[in-house]
Amino acid sequence: MKTSYLRFRLRLARHALLQFAVSLRSSLEYILLGFAPVIFGLLACVALPGLFAATQPWPEALGLFAGQVMLASAPVWLLRKRLHPAAVLMWSRTLPVPARDKWLADAAVAALIVGPLSLAYAMSTAIWLYQWPDWLRPVAPQALLLTAASLLLAWLLSTLALAHRARSPAARRPRHNRAAPSAYQPSRAVRNSANAAGMVPPSVAATASGAAKVLSEATASGAAGAPGSASHASSKAGLPYFWKQLFWLPFWRAENVVGIQQILLLAGAIASIGAWMWRPAIVPPALWAAGAALTTMLLTDRGDKAVAEQIALLRPVAAGWPLNTERLYRLAMLFTLLPAACVLAWFALLTLGRQADGYSHTVAIVWLCFAAIAQIAVVALRRLSTRGRVGLVIGAIIILTAIGSELWN
Image 1 (cartoon, helix red, strand yellow):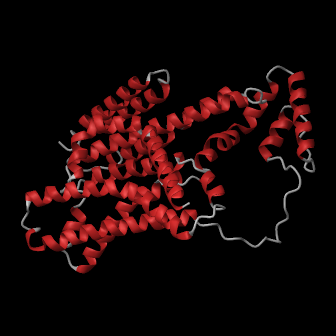
Image 2: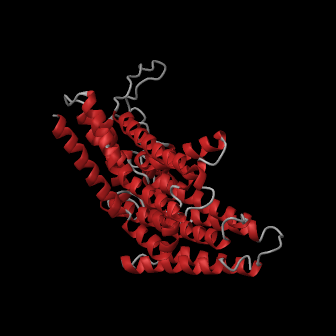
Image 3: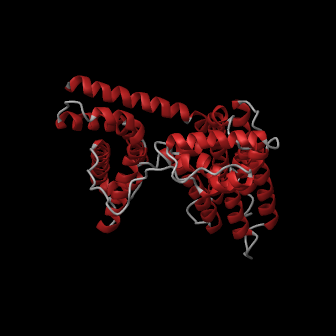
């Protein structure tokens, strides 16, 4: 059991990593084709916090060390649901596997990710040792020890994250202050849609079979009336409600990470623009312009792709619903532009909404106009091939970076 369970977990992890790499293929094309030199330059800085911590007093050194440990263990924590899916957890908990073998399997899966990451740290450390700066010479042994210790702690933390996910949930005491639902309760939007279409609203006390019967009667009555009256009334009364139920909530439930992905991209775009306007001396402004362009374009591209996949899933199911689904789909595609609109409004507030010396208002207006056109093009040109879409996004990122590099000139 020990060997077979360990082999099973490793094969499961490799398959999950392969699927994750395939899902990120288009995003990696954007990043590598547009910013490959910058990424290779940042690779040399991966081990810098641990090396530099040896030259600082212990409070600052401890903060740098802890930050490097958290950064190195972040990939396993972010991928924990893929490395050990919920469907596998449900039946693997009943297997007669000793706790020691489970810990070994979690450690091996964590090493599957921390191991290649350690090679990147080794390359970065070798670059700094080859450069041999003055600040590193007196503390080279301590710096190497801190870097190795941070990787070991990251491996341990990653193992703990996987082991915590595999734990059985604690049993909860039943709550007596809330009665268990025993009848179908229609929402307000459904009742309003039924009333507006002249349908019979579902009874509050209807059971599951009764609810299905009432729904079929309501659909038939809507079909017997004016053509499209049921779908028109439903979409008019509850279109935002159906968008919330069919597009917003699914992106946050179960194993879906689209919601978290969009929040991270939105936060990255807002932070990049804020740092771009702040203009710290140690980082060139053009680098922040590139980060803002990259995150803003990926924000719309990833959101539009997620909405398109959700529409493809809903089309065969929603074909017979008394709802104007095409209007709902157009609303979902339109809402894809809202996060990017917030980013552009933030940029306009920081550039056009205040007076400051050093940057050009004309360049800011040009950047805003081109960014808005690029966002609309990503959503509108849905029939582009995969390569055409990659070219559109990369071209927009490069042009926005070139325009943004002139903002502070």
